[in-house]
Amino acid sequence: MKLKSIALVLGLTASASVFASGHGAHWGYSGHEGPEHWGDLSHEYATCKTGHTQSPIDIKPSADVDLEAIAFDYKVSPMSILNNGHTVQVNFAKGSTMKVEGKTYNLLQVHFHTPSENHLMGKSSPMEAHFVHSTDDGQLAVVAVLIEEGKTDSFIEKIVKAMPKTPMPAATVEGVSLSAMDYLPADKSYYRFAGSLTTPPCSEGVSWFMMKNPAHASKAQIAAIHAIIGNNNRPVMEVNGREIKE
Image (tube, rainbow, N blue to C red):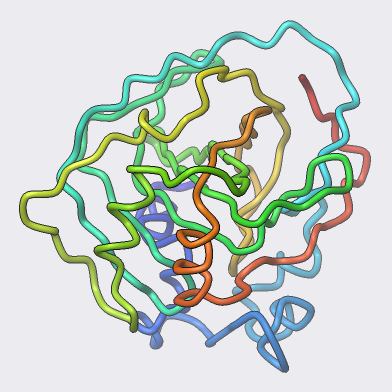
């Protein structure tokens, strides 16, 4: 991937968001703008229809290997939050990284899907968080965390209290900070597979790291986020023989 990918994923859906309507065809999650039509909305989105390593997928591990531990080094960051018309997203300040497979990835943002996009052994979850990363030369990686219903979570609560109810550019929330480390499961074992962006232009070459263990949020917190973003989940795509490592 090129460096321009970094700008794209700063708002993973930015190429077609309400803030960049001139940079790509408008898309959505239903009707003639829904996922089954993305590849026909613009030549820029052709990969959504023709790609062979598309995300999300139903994760059924196919290779038992000795995956290395991911070295997370996430810092506390001022909270910058936006609603781009497709999801609620928190942007992180520079300085948070993860190291794996000989590469250092910079944490850019986290956004949410309700219900989950990826499935695990045929089962979906009420919500999913995507922590989007990029190397300095534009290689992309997503750390995905399935979210199950449980106790009220302090990380999610900060987002619920600050999230714009209508599309709005990024704004820093005064006096509020957070660290992505606070929302990763204690056991950071993961599934590894090759994939794509789950939104147009559906670019491939994205490294996916799906946490095996879920995070939690209360029923009310999940409902609050869903009330803002609706059903923003792309259906699962064909695995097409991809190796899913664990």
